[in-house]
Image (cartoon, rainbow, N blue to C red; front, top):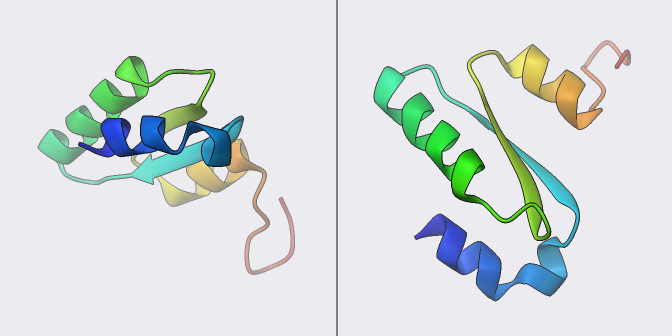
Length: 67
């Protein structure tokens, strides 16, 4: 469902990066599956278990101001 909607908005999401942070095994597995099935021309999707790793991958600064 998420990937279908993302593809519908492909012009909006073009070349964007999305990080899913999930602690549960089933939800993490679903996020990984979505990352595999996603169209890299639309968006780059990646699943993480750790929010700091996700922020680093996205290039988002933490509250302390470092990347």
